[in-house]
Length: 311
Image 1 (cartoon, helix red, strand yellow):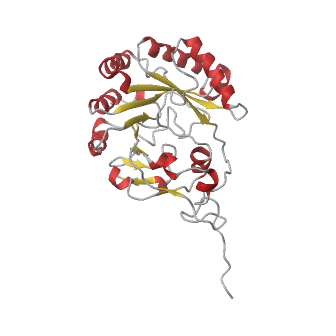
Image 2: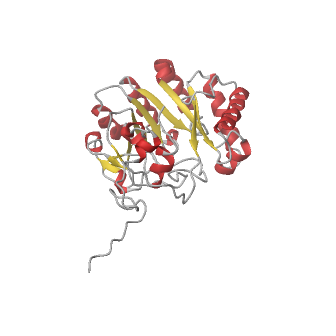
């Protein structure tokens, strides 16, 4: 008797979907953004944080300047250097890391909640100094969970919205280039979300264009236990999308895990725990093979949601 074929569960086989179709993958198209994750420690604990950052989660530890320099040295052309966390301004070496990227001629995008860690006098002075020397090559992108204070604080904790707005206003007053990353509610159209953020921007005296997708980045709401379709090779034509439009075709992220002897390079800024997206110790290793879209977030966040973390 012939063996009975048992199809794999969804997002379980690297090459084949549960329906037996060929899983889509994304090849390397050249570096757009090198992300540096300064660690999962954060001053707040958001209800729906993509990588579960919190004041106690140190499974990704702080990067040091010594960790970062070899990866900057690997770069042969100018690129965007993105810094994320956790909260990057909790990292002891954050200002040195920022300076190392900028002095090499790269542009710099720092993701922050603009709260207490950023507002310490030492950090404020360092940011002013970097802005004076490098101007528009440095942007701080402030994350919010909503343009509505109550909705934001339901995710981030009471008073988080007001504190972030204070930080945004300080950045504007200090002349430091700023952008906003907001979430779009499941029950809110993009137009409605942009109108809400437009009103907030005006109330804070910021000079951001709410219609510019780089100045106001809207991320889709992620749903716990979401069940999106798997992405097959046929999807590129059906969706009229090219693989090189997906984030992992041109972005990588450096992390250091607790207890690890060296940093690692990941394919994705969100999938920090899935070993399938851990690609090596160097950028050369991490860009050698295609990334297989074998995770629900590959579908819901990147391919179907159309999101990208970079500028």
